[in-house]
Length: 524
Image (cartoon, rainbow, N blue to C red; front, side, top):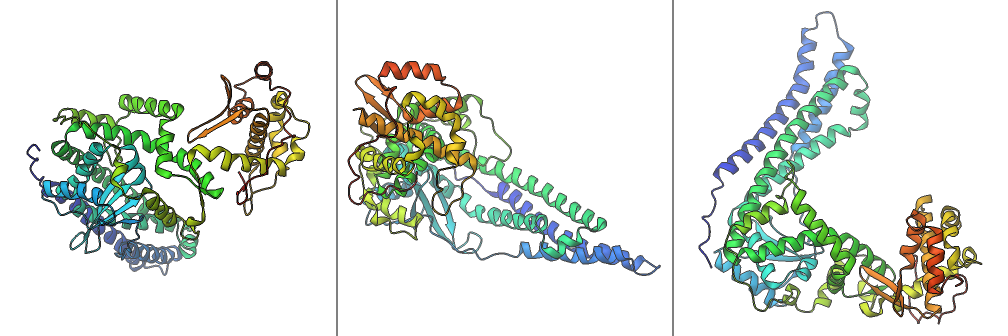
């Protein structure tokens, strides 16, 4: 491993950050004192008797001062585990990687490592007093482990150790607690209690209230801009250490993959939540890998990454530098050796299925997630979606009566009317737009069931689903959406449906085998 860069001195940055922190508390105390002293001084100067407006200003000033002082009182923060805790005895290969980097960097390893449901890794310190006597904590994302190779994961680990190495986690608590105090101050004044809200109806009190908020906002913007600039510099230093420790090659490719996967994760989580709601539990990490590999998703992710590499610029309030700038800096450092065998980082975990169940239980503490039926991604369509579609289509059969595939262009014109007759999910009151979306989903489901009845095969995977018959493919849900949006005309659809031989298929005559015992249909 090349010689590590000198441990950076935090003196200049720490001095700047601490100056801003002290400045905030000094400013807050000054404003609190001013809110009380100024109207009190005005009362003493008033020789013509008691002025009602000044009295109200004094009362309002006391209320504002109390809000400010209460906001800056330090809070005792209770640590809440962000996910299941990983134990070295249960995941020896993962912790061997952590220990190897800790030894190479002469840094104590984290005492606690947690698995989280994000495409991210992070380090922090908890307990102690403002960073002293605290416990080192590391967070590792399950999706992160799935999309990175071992060499890329090492680079990410080295980057996180760079924050320990540079002392970032010691400075962080001071900054975060001050930000929290600022937020409490601003929220306390901008969302006042009933008494202060009534007092601000008086013009002079309202003016004082407005001026105090403006001063705090100006300082907040200054504080955030400077501390976020410091944060970006810390990220560059951590990248530099990662490149020295593991080579730039792994970090560059890892950053690209993380950037793309983070943008795609919410869509996958939405698909996954529907499966879980139906009562089934597939392989979560494996499903994300399949989702990222789906042609449409892979193309969209690649396009977005290239766009960001060309266009994205640094913004004053960004905590991280743009991907383009981080990669450009990394390329100027040693690339490192290309690994001959580079498996997925998920292989460092033992019993992935068990860990996924722990994470689901952590995210859903009120539900016994072990009761969910396991299902493979190959069977997700037949075991989950077809029974779900059938139940929904049977419940709303009256709305489908007489409809054929060729009549879809006319049917989508009445989605709002159709949706008004569909029952709401239990405990949820839908808007007219949401009802129309459910009507569109009903048409897509009925269309799909009709295709199965006609001998078409369902292909359903994360990020990609369609029906196939020979060389022909069609997505009923996309078809309904395009017809509703007007990107597919009625005449074009009629011509295509006739060419596929499906134009006369009835949507209200679905004859499929009954759902297997224990299948959950639920609401779509």
